[in-house]
Length: 187
Image: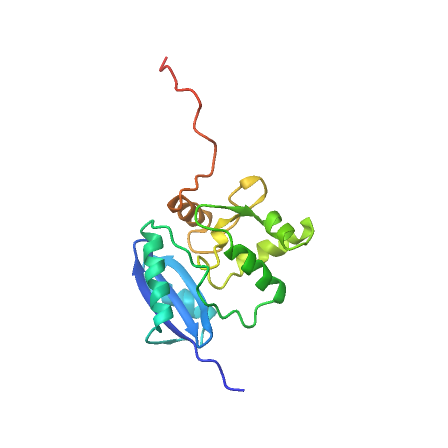
């Protein structure tokens, strides 16, 4: 069996420098933005040590353009991006497929995804683990999956839950207490 070759590209967006890696079968890794190209490359190669810089395929170029639009605040749909999730746990792949159906500006919870897959509430932890191990964050929109009660929950990408909140705000989702129904009289 031939060894799979992974190529990658580091590129700049309005949110910072992102990284994308691919095989002949599809996108294998996506690195959310950091402040420098070097930091992004280091994080990407930590999870894909055999990656080589390469000339992007037309599909990769389309995905890069979509990512740039996303970080400019333009509604973007990544559900058609071809992924290579070989080596991922079968249940995690089901979780990822369900998460990909959560569209722009919408959220769900770990428990709701587990229920959608026909699993009991105990599977919410599995959903959380799958989101934490998501190899293609943003393309599989793990930032749209919240903890119980609509709480932000964890986020393993650079910037943690602050980055998750910023991404949701880009999509028009505002977490936290609602604004007061009545204005103060200023006394």
